[in-house]
Image (cartoon, rainbow, N blue to C red; front, top):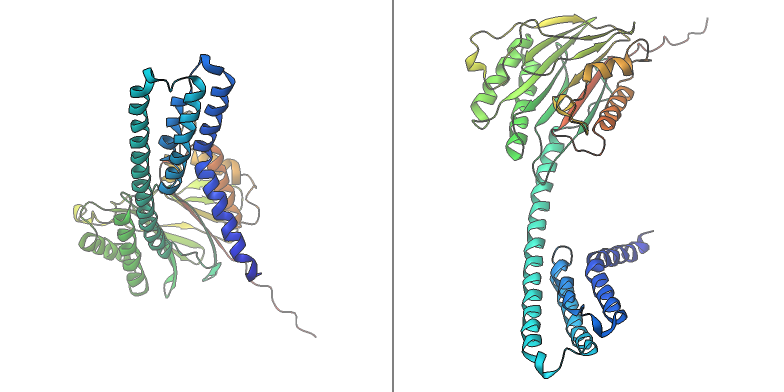
Length: 377
């Protein structure tokens, strides 16, 4: 198997080069055929200038040099065939030839600049993607008696990665998790997300009150994150038969109960985003909702609400959740199936368009108790 690796790499490189020069070579062929087919009544050889010029967008400088070198004798041949090499055309043809040479040289320069920029963007994007992947680690399938699943949709352009974040931890106070969205994009957003997750890791294991966990994260974001960044977040703590939430300016969670009912869990007292706690003298209290076996919780970032279809219509999140999971369509409360179904529905809504913001959905359900082992009488 390894012995076949070099030919595959070489073949791939060859195919890539052919794609890069396909357009300029096609122009050379088409112009030549049309010029010869129309005879001396028409002149098409000046259009050969398009070959090296357009090659700057796809081909490397060496390939442009080869294309330009092939085009020069081809110009002379076509000009002679059209009768444009007589004494009365010498000055005009010489000027056009020098313009052709300068255009080829300019195309080579632009190609080299394009390649340098592409390499720089690839390097920056790889760093940003590696940083974000270190933050968005896949959750454990079974964490403290919970089943969790996550689906993430990135709309990164170049290195403009978003700041969506999540993490779930099995702490002495139960399973605690956070889902959030940093204002802005790029490496600054990724850095702020890392600060938020780091603060949550520290506080979640030490603080018995979820509101205090949120307060400590708020202090850390205010102290360490860039001044123009804040984080909308939702903190959750799963307890026996219920779940407690601390709201910090984030999208409301949605509960799908085993009986088929769907409820948006609106906070009785919404809080400000993390990093803006100085504007809030007293943090809002934690609120608690029932959470039993067979129920499913969906936590989303605002990328779902910001998604638009071809007509500009927003994604009707709650309506689609009811259509997908309500009235007994939930099945066995499988978080993996839930995030896949909801994510596919979002993509169908967007269609050929792109998401305008990163989107993340986290689903959790109680794991079924394992069956009692059979004991022989």
